[in-house]
Image 1 (cartoon, rainbow, N blue to C red):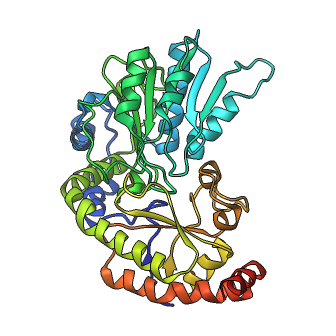
Image 2 (cartoon, rainbow, N blue to C red):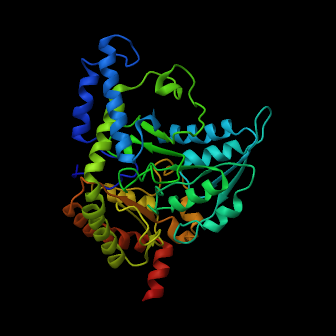
Image 3 (cartoon, one colour):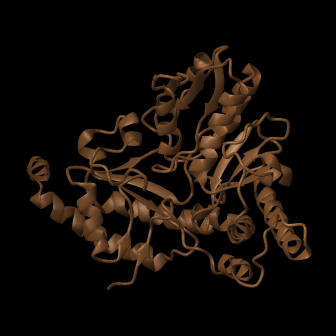
Length: 397
C-alpha cells in the first residue's frame, strides 16, 4: 500500500493531535453531564464554556452568539427554518444555484407543495463563468415576501469566495435576514463577525481538524431565533439535547489552532496550491481551471481535464495513494456532472473530467511534486483510450 497523499481536505480533515489530546479527558474521567448542578458536572460545563469562547474568538463574535450543533447541515437547516418560523408571513427564500446540498436540497424540499405543508417560493441566483453571482440580480430578487437570503461564503467545489460583506449590506438595507454557509471558509480566511452584516453563519468541525459530528451556528445577538431541535434548556434554550462535551471541546481547540495557523493558510498552503495548479495546467494539455482566478480559498483548486472521466482519474490516482475528489463529497457518488460546474457553464466534455484538490497544513512540497509527476501521464493514458480524446489528439496533430 503506497503512502497516502491526502488532498481531499474540503471533504474532511485529519483530527489534529492537539485536538485529540484536548478531548481525551472527557472520554474518560470527566464524563459528567454539564447540565447537572453538582460539582462533578459543573466542572465539565466550564470546559464547554471555554470551547465556546475559543470558537467565538476565531469568528470575531461573542460567546453568547454561538450554538453548538452536530454538523454544518444541521446548522444550515436550523438557520433557514428559524428564519421562516420567526417570519411566518414571508414565504420567499433566496439562494444560489451552486450551494451545498445542505442548503440546495432543503430549499427545494421547502418549495414542494403538499397536503398540510407550507409552500415556499425559492429563487436560485445564477453565477457567471467564474462562479460569481451578480449583486444586481440579488437586489432585484429581494421583495417584501423575502424571509432570508442564504449564500455560501466559499464554494466547496471550486473554492470561490462570495462577496458576503456586500451581500449582507444589501440584505440589511432591505430588512432581510442574511445567512451564510461558511463551512469551507472558517479557519481558512480571516473572519470578524462583529464588523460584518451577517445574521447567521454555519460551520462544521471536521473541516478544520476537529472530529466529525460537531458544528456550530452563529446567531447575531438580537436576531429572533426558533430552535430546530426541541428538548431541554441546553444552549440557552436554542438547541435541545445533552451537549457532547468531548466534541465541543475538540471544536474549541481546533478553532484555537485555526486562528494560530491562519498565516500559514495564506502563505505556505497557498504556495503549495499554486505550485500544483500551475504545474498541472502547464503539463496536462486541455486542462482548464474552474473558478475565479484570485477570489478563491487558498487551499483549493478545481481543474477539468477535457475528454476524460474524472472518476477514472481518481481511481488511477488512488492506485498511487493520492486522494482527491471529483466534486462535493456529498454528491460524488452521482454520475451526473457537478451542479456547480453546470451552473458555471463549464462544457460537458470538461465537467465530467473535473478533479478537486484541497490542501491542509499537513501537506508538503514533496507530496505536491509527486502528484505533478504521477498525474500528467495518467491524463495522457486516459486520453489515448478515450474515443473523444483520440479525436482531439488527432486534430492537434
